[in-house]
Image (cartoon, rainbow, N blue to C red; front, top):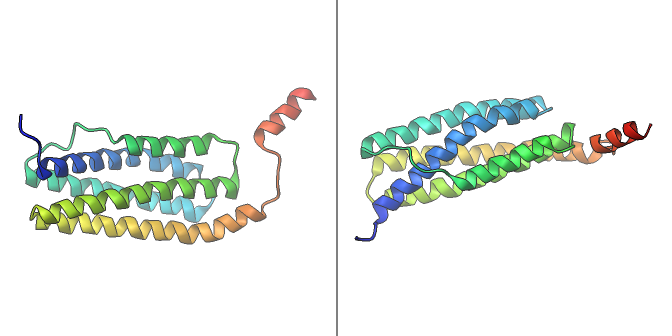
Length: 179
């Protein structure tokens, strides 16, 4: 059986990205709902719409390549989404939770930036110029989202640091059980 070539690796990367983006379509509403900052919530909602566009771009590429986008689970994104879910379920609240959500979201963005950069490089080598344009557009949007998150973090992280050191929910529960 011959070794698979760069084209097969490219398609595999695209399938990974397709699954990753679809996982995000499900995760972003949960992150938006958990946000206490209106700006962060609006950012997650806007990124959800953008992510749906990323899925459509990938579907366009798969159609042109006459390939199915299905068949691969992105375990990296599954782990990143799980970390975001854990953050939501921790005892953090308000600005501190928002700071944690931003961190989780930026890990996702950095993964996507790396993955789209790789896919774009493969498309360039394979002479898939239409794909390069679509992948580059998504890559630019991922970088912009990361920058917006960084700007939000500058304010929210300061607020989280200045927030009164309130008892955590678990400490409050413990006090209630004792009383």
